[in-house]
Length: 85
Image (cartoon, rainbow, N blue to C red; front, top):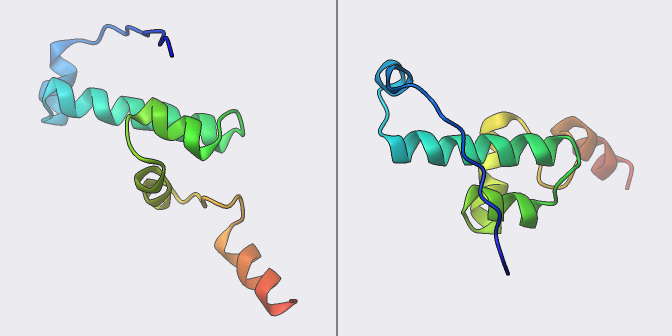
């Protein structure tokens, strides 16, 4: 499948302030874009994982870092559903 490429220029000073290499920053930027698209309901976990260049399982585990659930429920909602089951 063909892939489109998004190019975003960023200053070298950003890397210095974040203390990251270009590859570290770019991987994090891809993940952040994927996370946001998933959070907004505009991408599935599978599609977001492809954007982030990681496996779907890795992406689903990464969601926890940002307080998101891979099943679309907040932890409290899930506990309530289980209690009411």
